[in-house]
Amino acid sequence: MKTLLQPHLAKLIAAAATVTGKKFGLLVATSLIATTGIVASALTGSGGIGPMAAAVAALTEEQPAAVATAPASAPVAAPEAAPAPSPSSPGSVPSAGAASPGSLPASVPSTAPEALPAAEPEAPVAAPPSEPELPEAGPVKHVFLISLASPGYDAAFGATGSQMPYLSATLRPQGVLLTNYSLLDEAALANGIAAIAGQAPTAASEADCPDYEECLFPVETLTLADQLTTGRFTWHAYLEDMADPEGKSGNCVHPEPDAAEAPATGGYAARLNPFVFFHSLLDLGDCAANDVPLSELAGDLKKAETAANFNYIAPNLCNGGFRGQCPEGTPDGAAAADAFLAKLVPEILASPAYKQDGLLIVSFGAADPAPPADPAAAPAADPLKVGALLVSPLLTAGGTDGAAYDPYSLLRSIDELFGLTPLGAAEEPKVHSFASAFVATETAAGD
Image (cartoon, rainbow, N blue to C red; front, side, top):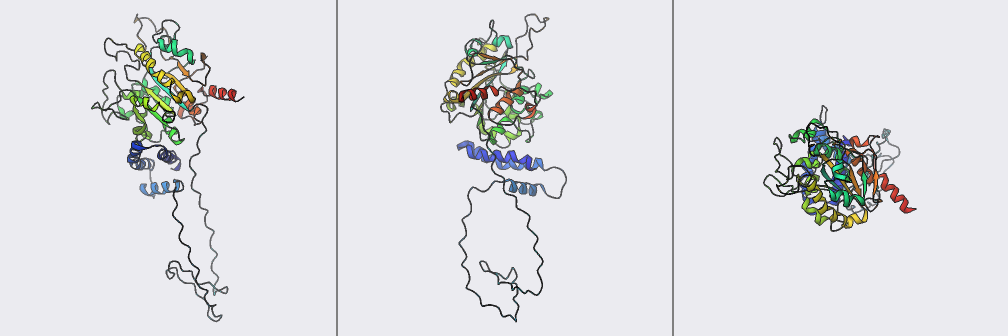
């Protein structure tokens, strides 16, 4: 029970120390109800203690020391010395109810009529747990991850015939190309969930979850966002054109229970936003506070202090590179995604946070290659091999890395960059991490 509640209590403590303004209001409005739900979900099965009593007991034991202590009470003046009792009249011990507040009981003579039983030693009182120890991050303090749909490795990064000239010719020479980065599945949601929580694809996520509730993870399943909050780091997910069913811009937009999503052509879709599929973020208000429209990114980039430590960026279906999603007569598919990068990436690279200690990851979270000209012909290449690009002032530009990476590697690498423990499948020994490249850079700089 304590193990289950600990990360969520730590999240509440960390969130209270970092959120302000309307975000604090969102947290306060949801955390009390949500915490009750979390406790209730954990207290299943038989037992003599009621759910609410168990919740109160567990929460009381796990709370850290109070921030403000009660003022010390005024010292009680010592009473005047009483005359010594007569030897012929043994003293008596007053009852607990007879003593008035602030009075001291009469002393017990050494020759008591009957020996009092020895008091049993009191059980030691466990000290309240200290606040979670802050993890030690590496040299990278700001990560910007852009997730797109891949047209295929050669169509994205090929030296000739690339459909993304800005990515392959302008941005590629500034970074390190992960030549063997592959997806787990072609669907956006299956890879997105793996990249932020280390959870394996399911039949539902591989279908981009037409039934929203079928893909919701229980509150016990944590995400990278939960880890960052507990570690006192900040995070934001920026989704282009995120709006409610009425068309109003909103945070953490997702389908209603028992409702099928019908995203507008080229617009926002929940399958591009893996954060809305986790109760750990929905129930405690993290999603409502940090999962925001892409239009907020420009303001957050103005100062290093306002840029989050981790930034997840997903354009809409058109600008994300999904074919057939853009208005007729405008760039579509890979061309639209490349135009999106050409506009947004220079803003990120010029931001104080990136210049100071940033890392830009251009990642493909879905596969949407164009069909072959001859339908009978076999695919020219594996559609799941998509590649990825790392750009950072802490890396040597123009390099390549041929290690086998996937969305689990993405999660493991980001966790290690911030000194966090990899989640789920990302913890497996076979999963490679590129975080060591930055450790080596930091070590070399200090020599």
